[in-house]
Length: 422
Image 1 (cartoon, helix red, strand yellow):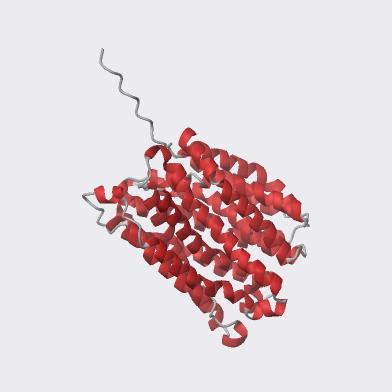
Image 2 (image 1 turned 90 degrees about the horizontal axis):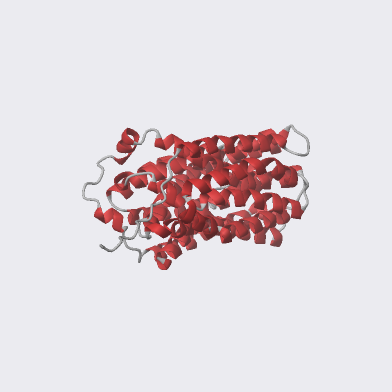
């Protein structure tokens, strides 16, 4: 299990590095380079729109790779999705700017972001299922939480490279070529990920299935029609909170508050690093007290913290901004540390890859695709404190709280010891 968990963590870290490096670039530099005829706010909105396309593609990727995972196994999903995401990320770093290629530049950007989303749509389901289906029932949430650490590692890695380049280069050099370097680095990371995953064995639970679903998506819709939208709605708050603090806040702080790129990236990276380090703790609690219990607690914390978070962010001071972001991420990980065990347990094994991946990634569309765009628009016309953003995030948290309340608990019930016969 340690070797398997490490390989899953490394793979998700690499794929989310690819996804996050685009989000950081969209917040900092893509607007002026690819939408120069727009106003600064409109350019940022357009860049975030291309960012959102990746989320729209993720459910489609989960259908494609979910079919592969339910029909052919979880392991092939990990290899193909990693190749697809890595290749498209490297290609983004090669796209010429609007000044060189005209309208073809944003069109190519849009296409490659869509391909990125397809690959990531398959990654989560494959990595989580391979870990969860190997893990002992009593520690399934703990072992499944390691792939959930991967996004934090990928984010810190992506933004660490961006931070180093931002600090070392002038604004002109960063805009001309510096922002492309993290995208090119994705090629080497993808090769490393393929090497790590080459030794993984197929899920024992998949090998036990005698009658594989012929069309997994059709079975999910037919037998789990209520479960999919409820799960997607439950997942929405995690995406909304995470991308509000890691993507929208970068643009808001640098453009509206005049905070330097280096300071803001440092605040966000530090908070994400703490969140990643603490991820196994709520997973342990999820094994002990239940997955749904932790999700309800995390949702409630999100609903209570969003307004204080935007107030702290609006100070423009490093320590309050860090504390505001950290509080939001700790509430977020209280839920998302256990969903890697929770969501797959909601679906039967023969359609688990499709059901878990589709519902998880639909939550990304609801919460992640729209949040940077909506938050940017809400913050545009208000005062210094973007209260509208806090109200919006609180509303998403309450919707997700209702969805979690309607979902069942899945924590395995311990089998009592058999007493010896008298």
